[in-house]
Length: 413
Image: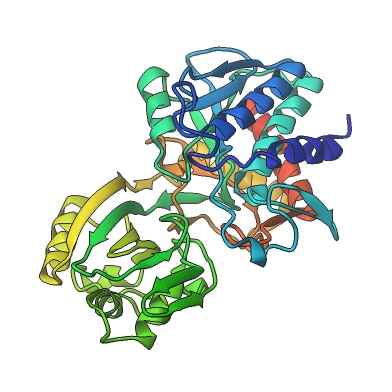
């Protein structure tokens, strides 16, 4: 089997699904959206065809494919839901019609996280083809709401025993060992303004429309919510152009710098720089905010202080989601083995494990859980932006690292 060609084939199958939360309808057997479950079913059909056992949660909250069952197993966590495509005018090709151009696979979800899911399946397939002795069965878990709340993986944890080792194929090499707390809030203002912008909490708003006496449209540049300064928030641009014309604009100016940095006063000085706040959506007088806070901060204390600060600004804060941060032991045998495997393949002994502001399944389990590639720190993928892509060299590099790492874990841990 040509594993690279097979990764491309499977990836393109998956990328055709507009597996966005709610798309296709919320159903009893598809509580996050029908197209997400359709994508899961197609993935499971492929996994069955190559000899893996499969399971789909009756509500479509998660699915998995595995080599066998055991109390001690290796989990690979991926997800098949994606963020909305955003403004289609910014795409060079339709976002759910995958295209290969200049050794790049372009589509929404290419980098986050459908190609990594295909990498996981084909890496396990190579181990099976080589008849590697699997001391630990491998289970590939396909999440369905990673972009909108982690409810699926939470249900998985309530039903299934935690894995012995977990690799999350949704990040940057060598690996992240710590993730920030994540909070989502609706910030209700007294504004009566008619505004509409943004597609979700976890992306910088790339477009906002103000329906006043005239219709005003402002465009920005999307970026991941954990890195708001890499984008241009359309709402922030509009507010700075109209600073005193409405309480909502005044609020935006009080909370966010034009650069995308926050102006929160409720944090100790040492944590301010590592905290981010992104305004992902606005619906009339309500702003939808995404906050990422270092895991060293006591989250309960932060919530109290943040909500008091909002109320002092005459805002009603409504918490809609909260994910606690995590820290995995970097000196464990598992962590040291994973790092060594990365170094074996790449020859890179300078890059070091790191903390991240991203919210991945890397926070799902308390021990031996690492967010492990597939990107190198020099890869650009336009994640959560228009023209999202993944390059062929990234695919080949990650695949070699994953196969070597899984083999080593089976043989040495």
